[in-house]
Image (tube, rainbow, N blue to C red):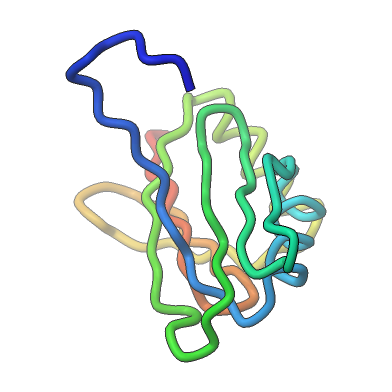
Length: 117
């Protein structure tokens, strides 16, 4: 990654999963992420959707304990909502300072998507 701002912080959350291959398939097939890289032993990988990058790491003892907050533009949220409906993904509504949709991955990690109406 080229450094453009010497004071910039670059973050990528790590979500622990029971199987990198299974988790990767969910993010790619259900949420249209792409695979950025995978370790040779398929123990860890990174999936990306635009500027959203998530590292998936196999660790059965810690799987399902993560939560990621993902902000979308209004149009991106409309598309996400339509995609969840079309693919029958179980999204629940919560109040987390504002209206938020929560999608849980197969391991129990939570993806929080705040939105305005």
